[in-house]
Image (cartoon, rainbow, N blue to C red; front, side):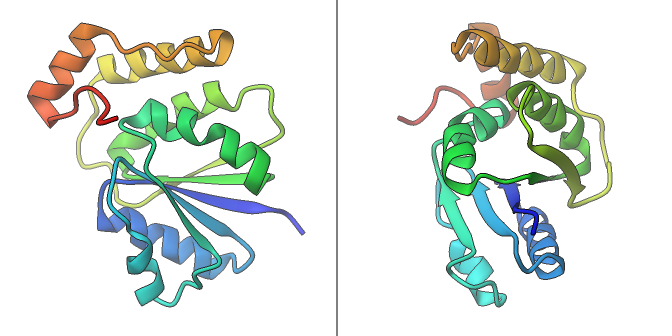
Length: 164
């Protein structure tokens, strides 16, 4: 039996609903919610997902840390062969580039799972910046967050320094 993990990149209910649909289609899969805060587990429980299948991780504060902050836990605790990456369509390109960097040279198969259609294009600079950050983390173990990137994202999305 293939070990499957659904990684729900926090953000909105559509992503949770997609993760639930995947969980229902793959009854052996577990779900890890990666977000900056809150506890979305109850949403899953209220929709019939067993509490022994859904886990919450609040260590991430952006797309790169959705993967880097959960990497050790995913590899050592969940040990998946297949990792479903659940996010919105506009966010999938960046998410998969980061996932490809973080999980490079691993035996984990990454499967993009879009929760909503592509309704807008993500800024190419976000894709580029986060891809570079993910590769630096993978190769050097250093998590970069350039000042200009923080300032741009704070102005546009309210994303700044981690809240830790």
